[in-house]
Amino acid sequence: MRDHAIDVHAHFFPEPYLKVIEVEGASFGASVDRANPKGPSLRTAAGTTPPLDPTYFDVDRRVRAMDKAGVQVHALSLTSPMVYWAGPDLGARLARAYNDACAQAHRAYPTRFVGCATLPLQDAARALEELERAATLPGIRGVYMGTNVNGRDLSDPALFPIFQRCEALRLPVLLHPITVIGGEHRLRPFYLNNLLGNPFDNAIAAAHFIFGGILDRCPKLDVVLPHGGGAFPYLWGRLQRGQKVRPEAKTAAKKPVASYLRRFHYDTITHDPGALTYLVNTVGADRVSLGSDYCFDMGYDRPRAVIERGLRLPPADREKILRGNAARLLRLR
Image 1 (cartoon, rainbow, N blue to C red):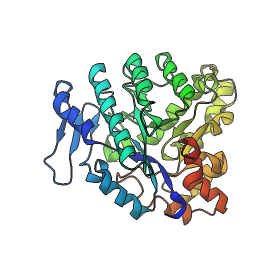
Image 2: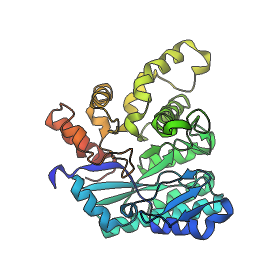
Image 3: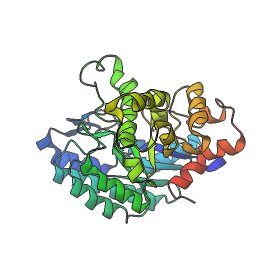
């Protein structure tokens, strides 16, 4: 396959995860609706998914879809509603079912799938326990987190030991927006909770990693911001200005905000070649990796196209974005 492209933003809803919700989710208001012929949809307090195409959970079909898109590897990840809506015990069982399914997908197709473990972050102790277990599973090469946990920001001190352990285990932390700020009111119309809320929440999470001191205290922790970093790469100057002039922004961060731009990694989901060009020029081609948001309608059907046709890149930089950066990040070399 040409260039062996690696997609770092590819979602997965395996049947074992769905079945745990079907059997145990009712007490938390969660269910799986299988009436739609297009596929099952999840209903939880954290939101409702659209009908899930079979390639979200059928790995054989998924491989065929990947071949069609010219993608060799998917880093599988769970997205909204994730597991935070459940109680700690059920959240731990959901995370375990999901992580085991990622390992099974890797066993079935070891050259096509790796997994990003999900953790029951609503309970830090259980999250650490599952992190230790999941890290031993075949194919687990990262940890996937929401940009907040039931409204609790990632700079919460209770979560810091998890970041420390991810750093020690050499597992990158990949983020995804969930229960975005303003989503219940002003962003409810026009799908703005996704169109604007998602990139805003990415920027909020990035700011908490910086101002909360996480990146300074975990100097080797890799953090991946989705959707091209959301608003963060375009507002870093404003954050840095606030850091200089506002007492509230004089925080645990040891350096100016600009110094942290390259502490993050970013995917390519910007929906505009000019925005992606700006991102590459700002953070460097070695910090950007292919992403598709597979296979939601807000993602890319042909994730390679924006890199191969929309950007003017030297061949070496194109190879980094298509494969090299992700291979290094996910330890696929």
